[in-house]
Image (cartoon, rainbow, N blue to C red):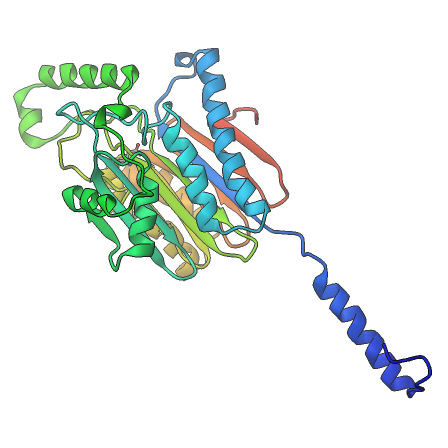
Length: 349
Ligand code: ASP
């Protein structure tokens, strides 16, 4: 303010007062509009097949992932950091089919796939078939940020990880769990019992549980990011790559919409599921819920597949459709309300 001895005309004083109050208004922190949605896989998991201790452990792991992502978002961090943080927690939780607890392939080992995408700049990174990377989502992000490529697979992805000391490595047996070994043995017994015609045509029973993990976040700047990580499908042929690391199939983010899918990957690839949901929002003006519902509940089942998806748009709307009876999931909405759930019609936890 001018020295009180200096007399200024009234209109100048008014203008100065207006400038001062504008500055104060601009300094006030706007209520941060952030949202987060996560999944730990879709599947046909009967309610009574989960005992109380396991149920508590699933909800606790989902809540830890929500907390990790939300800590980033509520302190003004990026959607990219938020989805990375949430997915790392889910990869480390042995309950889910990603990182520790990943399913076994037909050779009794683990090959992990992951991808990440940032909507506003359309940056993306992915890895497929990695075997010694503790947190594949971190390597996918490193491919995005530190290489000219979008996807690295197999030995090349491992060699890239060798050049990045910050990427933690583990023996392949680190990913083992008894539950997944039993699932492999059961799947192999069932396969052996199948008749030869089925084996020749490649027809098989629908898998009963998927378990991939994923996250989609909206940050205070209005940016969206999506991330997905998986061990793939039990008893998969070695070298098989599913939808999770494929941008547009298992993961997608653009300026208005982000998706992470979980389901029978071959059908998600053939139907470009994650991109199709966001394309319906972008090109047809569909609501996020209508777009996600139609793709997950009509297009995927009509093609013979099953699974679910989580989706989030730049207005903070969240959709979590699944056609498989259950999907481990959690959310924090724009208004701060949050919950985790496994089945349909489940009370919020
Ligand atoms: N979509 C994954 C895949 O096919 C499986 C899953 O969602 O659990 O590899």
